[in-house]
Image (cartoon, rainbow, N blue to C red):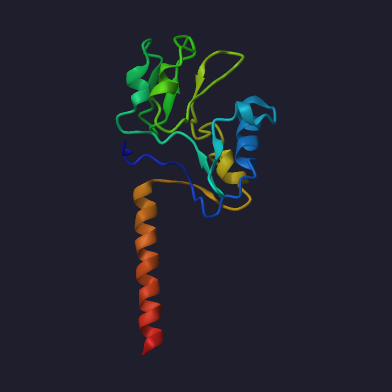
Length: 165
């Protein structure tokens, strides 16, 4: 389930405190209400105390697209987000079942599947990232984050090496 280099919202569980501000920012942006149940990002607790936020990972071979019997899901060529055709979607839930990350929700009013679209209509990008008080959320790719981590490790090793001299 690798990405094709598309950026998506990634949470650093070491920084996430579970405040759910990302859920509130998302629901306010998408629905105009502060209702976390209408959010397209979910804060989850991994026992005993680890918190993390989950949203669409933009899977390369998106099982949600494959599972949709009505061809209501497609991928944006621009940024890779999964688009929901509200006229075709009947809320059957096959996409929700197919998502390995639990990143798709069913809107209780419209009965349509809803998936993070990276707030593509917002000039400053995903509002969950913008409003996260602990900077636990970033818009990136796993590959970029791994490269940054490797650079940080090498920098620390050089610092230790120089300190030992």
